[in-house]
Length: 183
Image 1 (cartoon, rainbow, N blue to C red):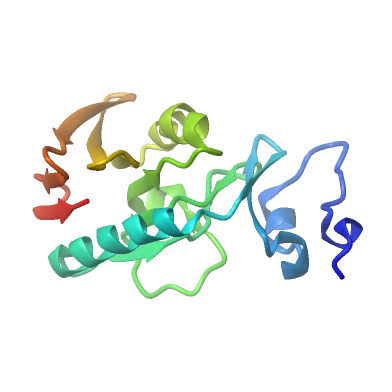
Image 2: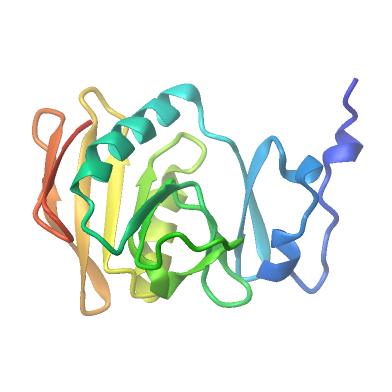
C-alpha cells in the first residue's frame, strides 16, 4: 500500500531552485510532472493516453522533416535561469545528442505544448509568455479538439505572432523548416 506521505515534496520557505528540483528523488516525482516558476513548484498529473497519442503523431510527422544539426525530444526539462524550469511536451533543440538533465532556453528552437485540462491556462498563457521572454523562436500550441487545432507562433519582437494555423486537422509549417503535420 502506498502512503501519500511517501510521495510528498517538502516545502521550501525561500522557494526552490532548478538544481534542487532536478535532484528530487524519482519516487517523489514519479506520478506527477514537477515544474518551477520563480521558485514555486507547479505540480500537475502526467498527461493522459490521448495526450500521449497526439504527441506521438507530432513526433512521427516532425522527425523526417528535421534538418541536420537539430533534434526533437519529448518531455525534457528546459531551464530558464535558476528559479524557472518547465517540461514542454516536445522541444526541438539546436544542440543535438547532449546528455543533460535540463537544456537551457537558448538551446530551444521550438517548444510545443498540447493543452490538457489540468494545464490549459499554463499552456495558453503562462508558458507562452515565459517562452517568449526567453526568446524561444517558435511556439506550437495544440488544442485537443476534434479535429485537433494547432497554431504555430513565431517570436516577432517580444511577442509571438501566429504564422500558421491548422485546417481540417492538418498543419503546414513554413518555418523553422517545412513540414506537414496530421493532427
